[in-house]
Image (cartoon, rainbow, N blue to C red):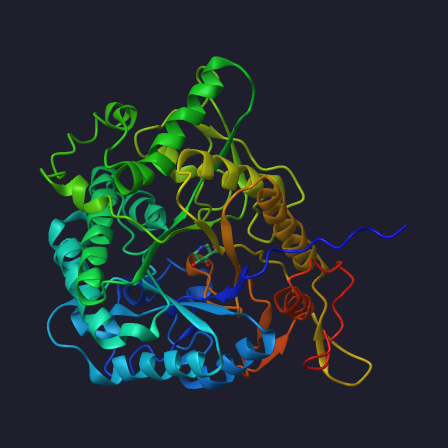
Length: 485
Ligand code: IFM
């Protein structure tokens, strides 16, 4: 008996995603000035092995080859981000024509190949000058972002399919300003909460500006929701879920989608701030209609109340994000170490969490289409030589991860959820922030000595999925001739 094919609906969008600082390199070329990630990565001790994005995957010089890889993958969309300090050095004032021309070339090349550009305006690389003026802890950064968004709408216009204002503002605010494990590396919890609001305000000002220039623009924001589990049914553990949900999830969905900060968040954080940085009228700005909501999903988190006298453990590695929402206003929450199997990031693998997230988000916001803008996994890949003498990367765990998570999307679709697309993170191995190049998320391998690209088995598998819309078996990883899948 054969199992019936699992098929995605017609028009379901397949894509691959990257971000500027993680792949471009050319950090000091073409008029680009430093962002907070240049400063941070060049600060000794901040990034593993002292690595920086100076060269990264050298996409700035190899973008034509990378666009060919996207075309070969058969994806309908590519999610990229703009380096703010490449197009507007310093984050204010005149544009840098050379920087703008780079993105125009990339977007035009994508369009020529029938690939829709999904552009994120901010994927964590704030121009350093704006950080010097206070960064996301001050309101003027949100205003500068609104101006930048307007300029981009004017310059890039109809080339852009979907405008995403921010990627994962949770990371920008809490990892950048509370835990300090991301740029700019500040450890000021009150500033992190101000950053939450100024990022939401930036989003609203950005959407308003884009719509003034391009009234029909499709707009979005990408959030990395925390899918939370209580370690037990005990009320005190369930209460921990509420606290983390407030600071990690509803701190963003509140202002962005409901037009209000949740009352429990304000109460939980009252010892840190009075939230007076929220001005009259701000919540009408932050709460903009969106074409779709971008959902990034990797893993789940289990939390519990520490037993009396227990010091809440900060799990082993300092780059793990989960612990740091506890750090702002919820110091008494314990994140339970994840249960294997784990990815190379130490994150658990729980595809059902993705279905659950999509169903819960759609229940809360029934008219908002959802798109998975990131999902994928880092594993320690090995290169081997195939029978034909070419380099191969057999990455069965990544194939399994992608298979099980796209299957989880199908289950959400089966439940009637309006999910419109899925972007694999990531097109290429790249600079994984505090981890440098030690973690490989790409479906295409980058050899950091030669900068050569090699398709992993997961890329071959993903190509089958993207070109057929039918969920392939995990064995379907052999290279296929173009048109043969
Ligand atoms: O590499 C990051 C990306 O920049 C944002 N989302 C999570 C990915 C994996 O950590």
